[in-house]
Image (tube, rainbow, N blue to C red; front, side):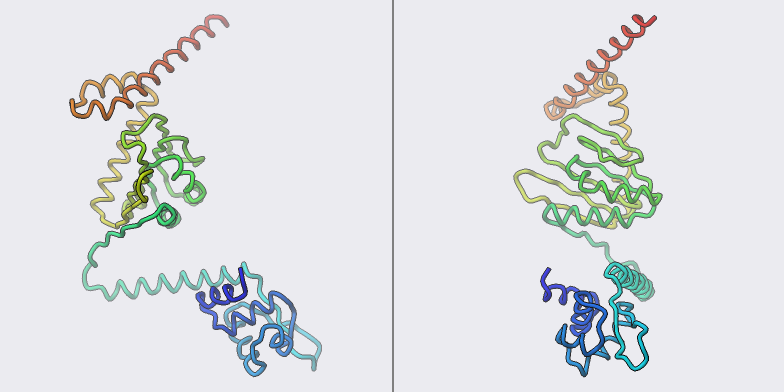
Length: 293
C-alpha cells in the first residue's frame, strides 16, 4: 500500500494528516527525536512535538528514557496494538452512541429492508451477521457460500453460539448441528442462502448463473421467526431423508400434487438412489457378519 493511501486510511481512523505522517515515519525509522522525525516525514518542526503529544494520547507512540540533556526520542507502538486500541475505542463509542440514540427514540423506528447486490457484498453482510451473533445461528445454503463463511462459523461456535446448518452439498467443517443434502435442489441451478442470527437478523440471497446475485437483509421479527421454523423443518427433513431415504421417498410420492411432480422428480430419483445404496450397504454388512461368524 502506498504512503498516500496509508495516510488516508489512518485519517479515516481518526488520525490527522500530521499524526499519520509522524507515525508512518517512526515505523520506517526509529527511534527518532522530533527534529529527526521532521526530516523523515515532512511535518514542520514547529508542529512535530505537538503532533507527537497527540500520538501519545492515542497510544500510538512512546517516549524513550535517554541521557539527561539529550533530545527526547520516540518509538512507535506496534501496529497491531494501535489497531486493537482504535478498534476497542471505536466499539465503545458505537455502543455508547447506540444507547444514546435509543434513548431519544420515542417509538420503534420503521423496519428497514436493505437490498444487497453482488456476491461479495452479500457474503460480507452474511459474515458480519455470523460474527455479531451471540446465541444462535440458523443457516441453509450451497457449499460454495457456506465454505466462504466457514471460518466465521467456527469462531462463532467456539464462543458458544449454537449453529444449526443445512448444507446443500459438501458441508463446512463446523462443530454443531450440521446436515448435508447431496441431491439436486429444486431451485437448481440457482443457489440460495438463508441466514437467521439470534432470531432477529435475516439475510435471504439468491445466486443465479444468469443474473447478478441479490439479497435482502431485515430485522423483521415475524420473518425471522417464520424462517427459523422453516429452517428447523428443513433440518429434520434432510436428517430424516439421510437416515430413511426409502421411507421419505414413499411418503413424498404419495402427497405430491400433480403440478409439483416434475419439479420434485430429481429429488425422488435421488432418494431412490440413496435407498438402493443404503440397502446394498446393509446387505454387504450382513454378508460380512455371516462370513466372520
